[in-house]
Length: 154
Image 1 (tube, helix red, strand yellow):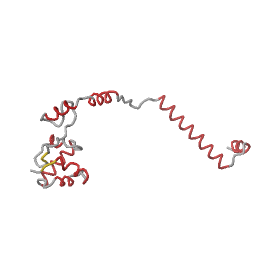
Image 2: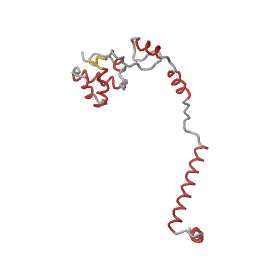
Image 3: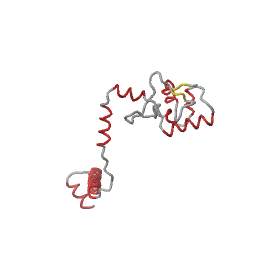
Image 4: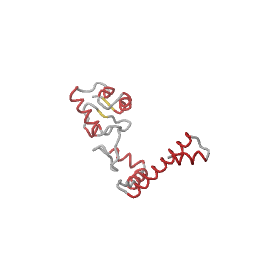
C-alpha cells in the first residue's frame, strides 16, 4: 500500500483521489470476477420465450369476426383460442348467482379472486350493489368501479 501511495503521489494524485482510483479498480475487478464466474458456471436456467412470442403473434392475427363468434359461444371462461372471454356490452354477470367460471370472465378476476367472491357471498349474504365487491379481500375501490358496469344484482 505504501508503494501505491508513493506511485500515486508521484503522479500528482491527492490522498482522496488515490482512494477513489483504488475503489474504481476494485469495482472493475469485482465486476470482471462476477462476469467470469457466470460464464464458467452456467447453472442458471435459460428461458426460451420463442413459444410465448409465437403464440402472441398467432392470437394477434385472429380476425375480429372469429373472436366475436367465439365470445358468443357459451361455456367456460375461455374462447376457442384459449383466451379469456369478457362480458359483451349487453351481457352482465350476476355476482350473486355466478359460478366460479362466470366470475372469471370479469377482467382481473382469476381462480383465487372468484373463490374469494363466492366465499364472501356465502359468509355475508348476497351483494346489494356491485360496489360491495370492494369488501372482498383483494378488490379495492378502483377495481370495484371498473367491474360495476359488467356486473348486475339479481
